[in-house]
Picture 1 (cartoon, rainbow, N blue to C red):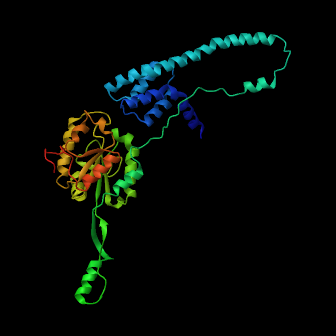
Picture 2: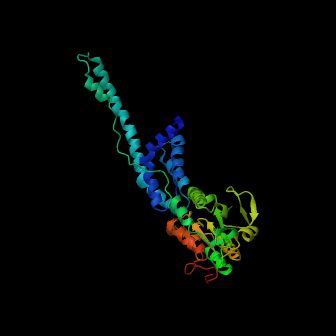
Length: 364
């Protein structure tokens, strides 16, 4: 470990009792603050901000962790309850030793003036060399845990199968061979038939950057699970920002655009389409323009396929009073967990849409 990494690790441990309780409380209040934002705040405070400047610390954390006025109210309350008392206590403890150290130095000076009669015992020396016991610190696991594992996703994707015989005849057709023997009267040659192959074609439309950045790890795991399930060569991936518009992009950095209509006609025709986006739920926003644009896109998509659905990485209880809640009224939307992915695969296999989900008031 380098000196810089060691310094960062020490700062995380040192500031853990101060800021981690606030971080956990904000997450309990459903404020979307992630581990990366927590670590960024700790590094910045350690490098540039003095803890004694309470107002500056509060302003900085609010800037990094808070996205709306409602969240700011919750943040200020939690900061006053959790962080401010701890910081004031530490500053007070830091100031107290100065007076006691002065007294100790005076006492030590007086003692030094007295002649030393007895030498210090070895037991006294060993006791002074014992390490100071630090107060108990609760251990936290900062390794992110996904709502669904890669193995679980892979197992679910393997259920997405539409098997048909296609290609070069290679498998033995037992029934056909028997029928031939009955017709001819003797065995002439085996009758062959094409092998069964999965005919599923998958098109992923992934919302990237912005509010979807905290879910990059989950989306990467989803793509890896598709590869392990055997659907890699049957999957096309395109990217967009917020909602699909006139162009989709082949690169995650939203470069190399292709016309939306061209992609839908070539890739989505009679195939399975999955949209992956928070639909405004990550930041708890409601955007009418995003809603109307998404509705126009779904109407355009329906001209090519009826097998489509939406995966939302944000938990379902956080969709309320956001654009996601209204979008879920006209497209099957499921949270990106085990139950949600199972339900989505059923939709792609031809199961009916959930009751009440329709673009025009009637299920397709």
